[in-house]
Image (cartoon, rainbow, N blue to C red; front, top):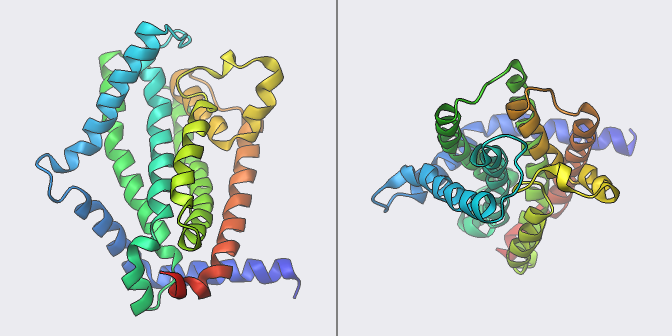
Length: 270
């Protein structure tokens, strides 16, 4: 058996194992969803209110004050289509990074595939994301935004983002267990990453000589693809999206193998 075949079999067996532990996965995700706003008065309404006020504030700064070009689309919609997926990415990464540390009692007491803790966190953030999309629907209705058949690309684009996020999350969660500085370093990296991704500005504003950096940034390609299919009435750039998919799958495979390699030592460091 070649090393590549062995790794493929390992990945397949892990998928089977996840199916066996699917009830635990959903229970952990449900716990993550229900406990977060348990003591707050407004409860789950914050999932909608947070992005709403964030969008209103950023719309004022970038549209009214800085007058950033939004290519003929109302800026708040231009921003919403990019910022909501970006928030999903950021919140998934930051929460997943602490998933092992925050569930140390489970890790030391019972056996289960440890990556379930990471996946459960991402599932919970996906649920938040779907609820937060109420804001986007609201703005689409207010500004009478046209929807075309190309919106059917959205699930595939979102899937690519989730694969990329899962791969990074597995790496960061494992590293953070050994080096707790990772969670603080991540905040710095994500801040820089946000400004290097065309969220508050169109990709057309990038100087031509720097466009190659855009293709190497999966989140930039994903954000731009969301805008293309939801606002431009066109399909995504398939070349760029294919590169983003290849990078995302590669990151996930590396992240999974890295996580499983260190998994045996987790109980000694929690």
